[in-house]
Image (tube, rainbow, N blue to C red; front, side, top):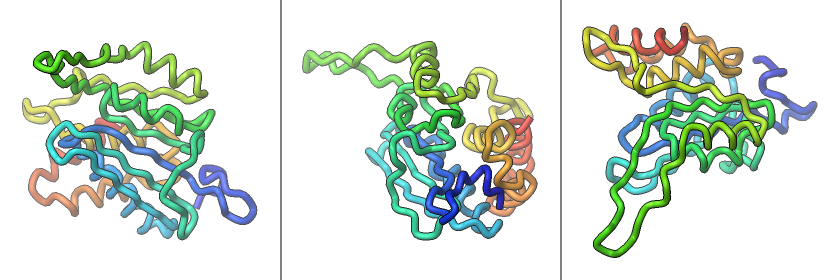
Length: 209
């Protein structure tokens, strides 16, 4: 276990926290499950707290992962996450308050923009620009890592699973990669999905690069 990455006090009271957020249908909780399983296999105490919003596709989904301390409570404090993984641009703004100064903020900039309810005279607030997200993350002291959905790699002409690609990027480009072994995470992915194993392996490695 890398005590520096876990940022532990002498009593081990400060775990490495990961805040995940996105929308239904993106596989956000799967990212959390794979990180939790990899941590468990590495002998790192892990607490995983998923929260689903609306059940239908597009509803808000979030999860909180606390690594390095057995029995850590479910709520990551504000400015307490060493890593935020956001898979939708608008939802990502809800996670900015959790990023620790100097922490990594990984954004897959997918846009889910619901239609305005004109029948009730209601209109959605202006959709946030990438520049707005960048400014807020910077103001919070986070290190933004941006993944452009338009550049999602293709495997045999078909876009790879975005969540597996994002997980690869988290292992390859954030402090999570110094805590978990990317090779072992790749093995977990292969074991979980026998069908499409090569496609998932390609997605993960593309993210890591």
